[in-house]
Image (cartoon, rainbow, N blue to C red; front, side, top):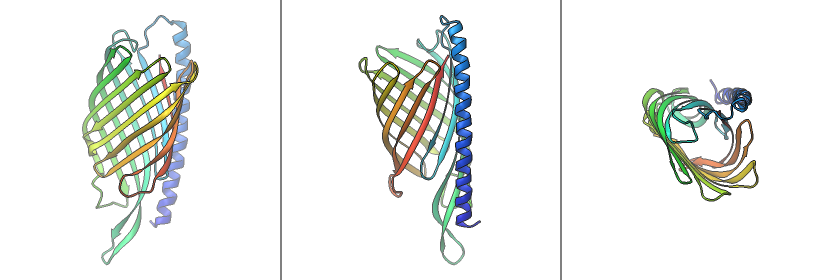
Length: 262
């Protein structure tokens, strides 16, 4: 396949990812609305379930994810054990070179990443701070076309997944969150810190920054976010700049996420 063909295929995969991501978010939102009705029918009941989903895009990738969790004991309003599962899919592309027997030729590579994890953890409460620590198993699959002999992040791997999430209400208006994860499959890692300010009973705005990557790729990111805490669900829109630490020019990114506890 030619480089133009690969780029057309990548563009098609990105469009399919956006369609799938929007459909996923619609499903999450619809489920959240029904869950809100059920919750109002028995508001005294503890909040034990969570569902979430999102879509993110930059100049060379689009990623969609979905997940859910369960809180044992008194629910999410109190310390206790937690279960969670998350799945994600992401088409992406990058430029490189392949040796054709005579010389290295510029090549456009098209990739797809799929990810699934199941984790158990515990939620801690201390004053204005809530922290969660999870551990579990993960499965990651990376497919690249054409095969790139210079990229070790290909194939399927199983591994250990560790996740830490923290939230602190600095004051009645200001809050700080810091989340991070590490997986032994392809040495994947991800971290995001946000500081925000509530500007009313529904909306909050703030800044975000973090890092992500694997054994072949390291990237940083920084931007801003707007969060809306509605009755049925919570929605977050964020955007900014991201890029490879060493090679790539910075790219803009845009993300949308939905979250619901019931």
